[in-house]
Length: 468
Figure 1 (spheres, helix red, strand yellow):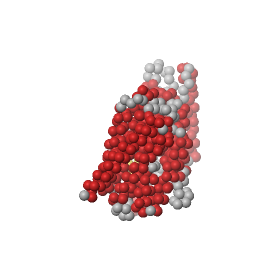
Figure 2 (figure 1 turned 180 degrees about the horizontal axis):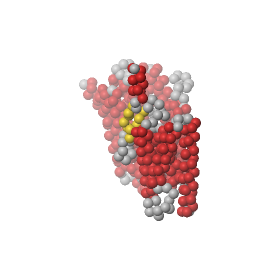
Figure 3 (figure 1 turned 135 degrees about the horizontal axis):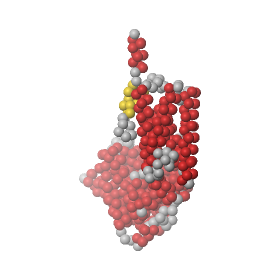
Figure 4 (figure 1 turned 30 degrees about the vertical axis):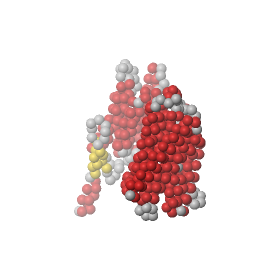
């Protein structure tokens, strides 16, 4: 009796409420011990969901042809709604026939899909001929509606709902998408594809283990640096193109500074050398990215080891104030290159071999700093932090905050972090001189030296007060 009662309870559906953002309706997702078993409430809710998906997609299609004469279109809101319902019905019948994975259910659903696709394609072809147009959008949207209706009957209703809403959104964004494609240049498309390939194709297969002696080089870390450099450069290109010179450069600097101020400096120096913008404005962007870097380091310290902020905070604050002031003067001033500002035009989002080469160089610097830091105690930690800081200040800040109070004291840890920040700032002078050259290099050197002086002065005053 107990076993029979347990089996009877197991047959009862486990109700999982799931509110779906489609109209005002609420659907209930049911889970059964046997996936092929479906009772009336479940079938009804899934049919209703498929009908809603068809109505949503059909609403967009119908709106576009709302001024067309009745009977002159192959598919409107009613046809799409029925298409979704038809697909769900076919899916329900296939499930009742043993499931879509079975031979009978799979064949039934495949025949229904092929038949529907043939019918709707024929009507859309005749419509194109009558209108003397060439478009497969309506036919593809209708076939997808049928497929989503079928999936809503046999699959996860959340995925079906999300796909239906996404389909309607893409169809509704026709003008925006077409306008964007018209404005897209080949270098932009090529660079975007390269960046996507670097991130989603190459990165997953790049080894994540150190290669070489003395701790070696982690290829994945090198590739991540290259992605950061390329990404920051691409963002800068896009913001300047769509927001104009002044706002674009500064907005890109703030965004890029959240990732890597070094990447912003390299990108700006390359563009200054290529004559793609005002050196003054590009230098202002580097200053703003540097200010973001100073504040970012302070934020990491606050989160991981707030006690270090007593020593490091004033220096970081003083340097950030100078950098922000320099950026404000550069962005709003009226220098001799003000007339160039309106002609700022970036020609290429980024150069692939340039970012890979810089990434490899910075990786070598990181390895050198790691070796020095692990070999010479507290002094070595400061020297190593300064070396690594040329490429990555955040990693130094995070690692150093974990070394206090042992094996490093609070003062040594703060010095190591500030040494990394200082070397990163000095590195900007070198980048400006070697890559940007000219007036850009002079402006970057002036900004960096002013930040260093302000930081050193604030640190000295802090130490005097702390030891008095």
